[in-house]
Structures are given as structure tokens and as C-alpha cells.
Length: 101
Image 1 (spheres, rainbow, N blue to C red):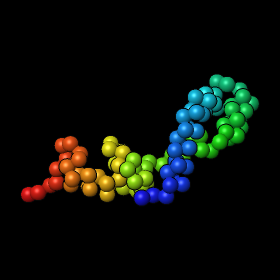
Image 2: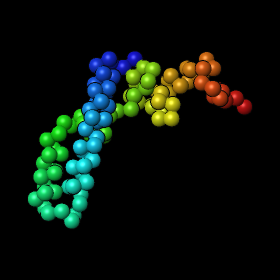
Image 3: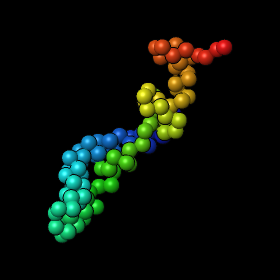
Image 4: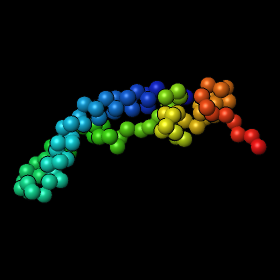
């Protein structure tokens, strides 16, 4: 089980990302538009830099829904490899069976 503080910090980051996503997208569009004057693009970059860092999507860490583990994460199942194996062995994941040949 991962530290509770790490899991909660990641939840806060998800919430901030959701909150600031439209504003960040608008500022990024202005900063990337070469048709706009350089001063306006620079001002957009400055505003973007002043926004909270945790509002960026790249700061979010994929974590297991069951344990909070950050490594060995399967995106499709939103679960780490350890829990995937354990739940599959118990027959709790539909359609997944242990390989045997």
C-alpha cells in the first residue's frame, strides 16, 4: 500500500488540472500562435508560468486504484501488476485466466 499522503497529493493534482485546463489551453494557444505579436505571446507565457505547477497534466502520476502503487501500472485496468495477478487468480476479473500449456 502506498503512502496515503502520496495518493492524496495525486488527487489534489487531478482536481487542479481539471480546474485550470481551459485557461491553460487558451494561454498555450495564444503562446503558440505565430500570427500574434511577440509581446502578446510573451505575456501569455508569463501568465502560464505564474499558474500553479500542479495544474499541469504532466504532474499527475498514474496510480493503482486498489493500492495506490505507482509502478507496474496497467492503464486499461487502472491497476498495478500485483493486484492484477491477485484478482485474476481469484477469478475476479472477467475473461482473464491463468496461462497453462
